[in-house]
Image (cartoon, one colour):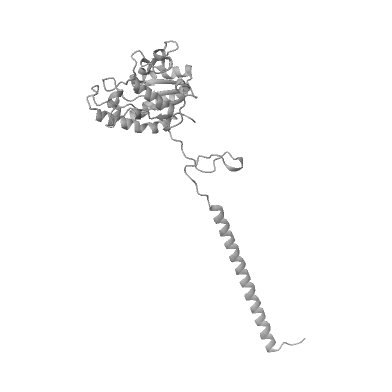
Length: 288
């Protein structure tokens, strides 16, 4: 067997060492590339497209019914629309206080003073409170005394338009929770009785500067009313209803009911005021 010289042994050792170093470098490089690829893959999976919070598209790709992006909540205050026409008004039932009952006496609805679109009691006024579900109206089709939910179950109207707040305003002004709770009970009961009926909440009408019904002045009463109107969108959201700001057409520059829209007592409305209210309803319609 040939014996390697000292010089040859040194050369062999050097080559082995160099090969070992090269192998280690290659392994480190491969490991580094693998880590980089893994990090990039994780970043790609974590990236999310920018989302426009106003986007209301709820259809997910590939036919998946699950929404793929956050969706904006629809406003519960009805905005301006094209004129919905007289047929839209004709599909409504109106329930509320004396200012609602007077829609009949002013003759501004289809059928004039004989219209059956207004539900009211014998006194033509009603107050919202925690007993609202026990209070009765005279159902126009038969004259029978019925609760509002019972009448809704029979009539199944497309729309019920509610307007409450002036009667009891001094109590509500100091107990807003009572207003929200009582209104919520009424709305929920209507939905239970007639699930397809859309409930519209009119904003509370202001009072005029000359009102003498309340011992507190118009500024204070209208301050209470303003606060109730601010509560309506939350009530509507909680109870699946919609708000129509019809009171906005009645307010004068001083924040009170316009003097030419009241009959002299500072609360009740003229025929022209009701025309403006109905026009507002027609041009701020429910289109969902």
